[in-house]
View 1 (cartoon, rainbow, N blue to C red):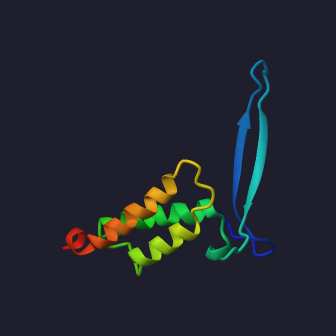
View 2 (cartoon, helix red, strand yellow):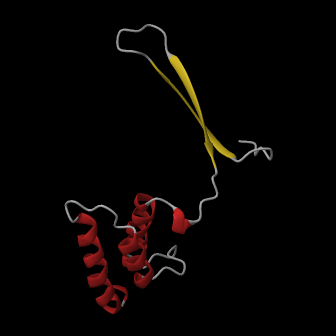
View 3 (cartoon, rainbow, N blue to C red):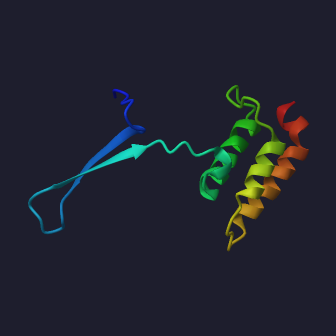
Length: 108
C-alpha cells in the first residue's frame, strides 16, 4: 500500500456482496482514515479491550508488555468500564486487582 501524503487514509477495505435472490455482486469500497485520536479520547470499548490485552501480556510476563503495569491496566479498565449491565467489566477490574496482588507469585 502506498502512503498518500495528501490525506490521512491508512487502508482501504474492498468487499462485494450479492442480494439473496440477486445474480450480480455489488462492490463496496470504504477507506479507513487515521483520525489521530489520543488514546484517552478513544471509545470506552477500545480502551477496555486494550486493558484486556494488557492483562494477558502482564499475566504471561510477555516480552512485549513494554512498560505496562497492573496499576495502569486497572486505571484504564476502570475508566473505560462504561455501561456494564451484567457486571462483566466490573468483574474484570476485580480480577485484575486480584492478579495484581498475586503479581510476585505469577511472575516469580
